[in-house]
Length: 203
Image 1 (tube, one colour):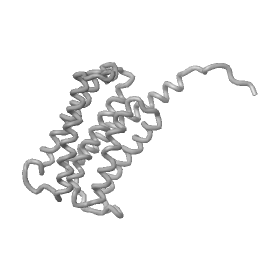
Image 2 (cartoon, one colour):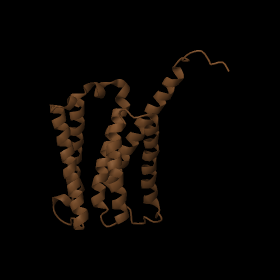
Image 3 (cartoon, rainbow, N blue to C red):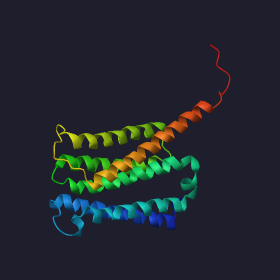
Image 4 (spheres, one colour):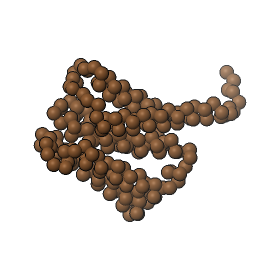
């Protein structure tokens, strides 16, 4: 981005990452402090406000320096998938504070979040294996959420509720799943249309 020099896009990008860092610090304080019972930061909506601003700044900064990526129709589905995966990771960052009383949930989300955030950038240029991996990952996360709301899961246990944060996350994962499936279908169709690369080798 910007070929190693400071650019407006890089500044926006850094500001977005900074806001994500603030969100992570808030969730860490909730975990280490045993939860926030009172105050503005104890509200889901208040903490969630930081997330769309952070995502908007990060992607605006990236697109500012590389507009061809954002407006390339061939990459459109990947951009949508990357944004959805990035958004889902940010939402799961907030989920760490929501599940502070269950250590296994904290470990799960603390492991999932960096994987999602890193994978979001790789999706723009990633190969089919990465796309297929996150098709399975998105489907698994949606299935895990649904099953955990209708029955008690072994090991993890817990009393799960249908909450706005969870619904927002699953909606984001549906968008991710749809974008990736469509991208894989387009790739498969493109490979079928390609002519043979040369004469068949004789044996």
